[in-house]
Length: 114
Length: 112
Image (cartoon, rainbow over all chains, first blue to last red):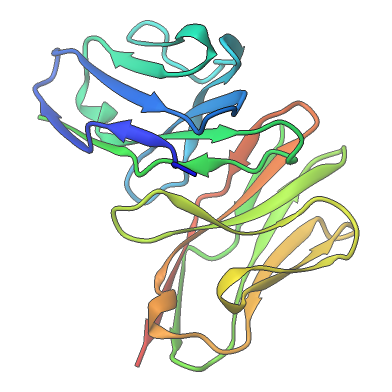
């Protein structure tokens, strides 16, 4: 079974530029999460999708971050414009129904904003 | 609001010694509990989970955890650690509202 795929693995941009991350979850998984992990901290939930609908985006900075999940499969997370404090690892995870929330994670995208 | 507290940010231990990584959660409703491990430059990998049933849960790599409802704790243990166990460990809670919330992490450093 293929795991959660994320790209790119690494990205360096200047502040005020825009960037997009892509995630392909495990086939058949209804739930998709985007987390932000700042160095030395635990993952912070940014947005959660159930199929192609948003379940929770209460911690997504909506003035600069956006996310979509077209057709309930792949997802993209965009930052525009980026700030220095957005430097972090962005983790995508997916979860099937009926597993009590067990999530499968991709390897993440490490973003550095300079 | 639901939260997860990992009581130790860093735990240094010698190889073959026992280790306990502590986790407490706050929730007024039933929850599911997880421990994940993160190796450098990797995503998170599930170690073990508690959904229901026996309060002692066994996971991969010789780890186990005990769910204690009265103390709202879910501590992770291993009787004898290896150098390869050096990693960051995260406790997480999932509630009926459908959110998976993580603690701040515990860095386990195993020394020879």
